[in-house]
Image (cartoon, rainbow, N blue to C red; front, top):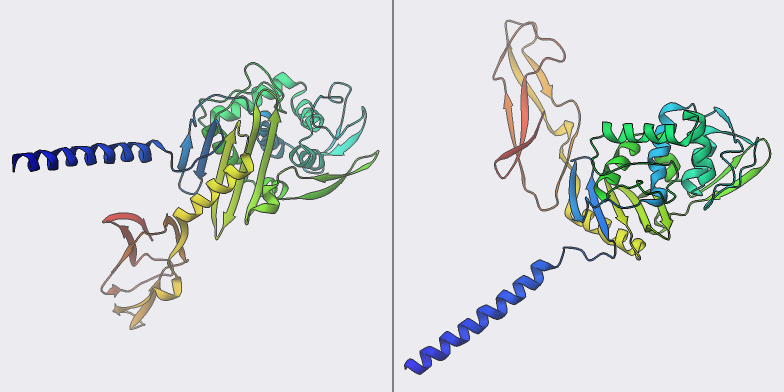
Length: 348
């Protein structure tokens, strides 16, 4: 009997040990397995991250730098503003549209060239037009980064070629992209696959380097990047049913695969759910001492909220039981409260 108890106890201990190893193995694996050295999956609507991997590491960002360059250019220039390439802004190494000294292009076409063709000469031409030289424009970029509350980003140029103190993090790059995507022109540019642009000398057909535009449903950009030192960097954004996700990888040998996995993961978890349609929330309220016996009250707009797909949302309607004249259009007569697990997530 004692021997049997020992055997049972030993068996239990072995099972507990094996189970603990299994648990440790499972918990040590990240939710996703990506090739990137650093990665982040961001939801701008809720200012939350669904996935992080070394997201605060300071790393070179290559041509994803141009997201900030484009943002500043769109904020400071008219689209039809004509810009002349100078001897200091042509002949830049790396990706290029091969601008010639004295060549003139509209600001919007230079931005397209920079974002689709990843043209370093277009980036430098824009920067030196806005701020006279690269150093002054880099100061503008850093000022913008500071205004966004970024702590792990520093720019030394507008194009992303290797420089000692030119770095960002996956976390910060996601926030820069979210800010840029607020600009509708930026969204239009980054979601464009092909674009013909013209200068006073020639026309050029640009083809976007971002394969995600063709391979991922709902993709709206954003930017590829590569140098030998930095490896492959990629920022992708997708929009489905009003829900935008931003995926960032830095130094990722399999970046296309990483981004497909990350975006799929995000859309499997959350959705932009209709909590209330205005036609379903119309009520009549009695009126005392008025010309009308009752008034109709309701919510002004449909209500949408980003929530987990498995969330159960409860609704509570609070209305005034009766009204006393005078009553005016737009008066607040009650509210609808939406709760999840007893916590209020929205009200209108």
